[in-house]
Length: 511
Image (cartoon, rainbow, N blue to C red; front, side, top):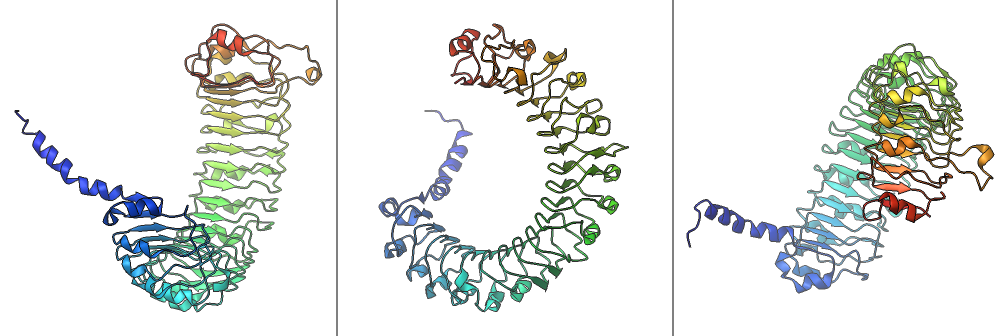
């Protein structure tokens, strides 16, 4: 047989790749299956579905093991078998009942990841862990008995990048954490730390101190990018965090924005959710890199005019406040997402002419009697106006040539303007839009809105709990419709089938 000369090199490469493929496939989820295989071809072993209290010595047969997971089975003894795994890089022993670590654990010279969260480890365990100098990721969270350990022994972990120490009842931040040169991610959440004064290495980028009674944070961390201080009692922030991109101060009981934040010139996202802030300082305009501002669940009464001077702001969450005034007098040129839900804003509150780039608008549960005037907000793609008392839709809605998603559910009986069929809607929800006078009238029937069947791109339609008893026969979107909710209507499945809509093409909910 004549063979194409180009085929032979390809065949050679394919055959040469078989050992690599076999190595990647050496993954097992039961000890029985792994023991039945060639032990040297077992590379990944997950025994989290087993039910033994001590690791069996038969594991020592898997000398090429790279990853081992045994979590959530109340394992109490690890066994002194760890010298058998010279290639082990990943060890997950979370959620067990381990109290001590065997001496042979230090022989895992290539181990990079060690998870020991939610065990019963005592102070002595840190010594064995500190001997594994190859470690890059360590989780000791929820080992409350380890609290009083000599944390200084961890100074030997020069390669450690990720350290999680949640819920250890720590009252102080271990000073050794400032001596770990490679440390990139540190989580000290849910402890009892009140004050931190420490200099961290230049590689620390993510620091989580949430759910501590922390009131003072005096740190040096020149590379820090993400800082989480949620549910703390923080009063004093570091004066300089030159590289900080993300700051979260949710649910801290704050009545005003901390002045130190203004110095964080590289800040891109600021979250102040769930505080008691009633007024915003104009100095926020100094945050020229700010892209996302989260102010949900505060007591703000206005959108200040100076928001237009934050040039890169693309996302604004100001839902569930006390908003009554919109003082904008200039465009927020890059704003794409605006959350105004759960405010008593009124339809005139929204100023579309100052939202030229807006793509998503959320005004759910605002006690609106009509939709806003959307004039000027020509880039809108998603509008959520559910849970209001709307009966009339402003004609400007039909001019939104990029609108794909519209939710008007749980309003009054809707009056649609002409031209709705021209919208490029993909998703439409008008469920439970019934006039107050019709709620108790079982005989009331509404005419199915004619524009809906003319929408050519519609994929999802929800008209649940609407008094419709008849569907138009011709649908422009019949071929594209993927989801149809007519539950609580007077329509039967027979009528739906007559239109040509079937379960094999569309997920239909009608009862």
